[in-house]
Amino acid sequence: MSGSGTTIKPKTVTKPKTEQPKLHKVILINDDYTPREFVIMVLKAVFRMSEETGARMMLTAHQLGSCVIVVATKDIAETKAKEATDYGREAGFPLMFTTEPEE
Image (cartoon, rainbow, N blue to C red; front, side, top):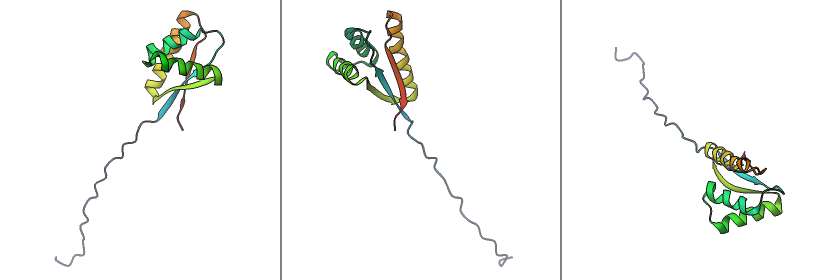
């Protein structure tokens, strides 16, 4: 029986590769109706920005048409964008935040 020719191979252990979650951008879209002070207030409340940072983001969106506010995981980005947009809707303004995948 010693010459049966069977070889025993050790089992290979594979470790699952965990991928980083895909990131999404939250984008502030400029409009001509929402007051600047209100936009800054929303940025401070939802995204926890300082007055100065909120003002810079608002002005960037005003000048360029849109501005990336934050990059986060998909769930967080969508939640923050909806929360910020809802603040505007409740106050009667067309304030809009959107999300898109980061490249």
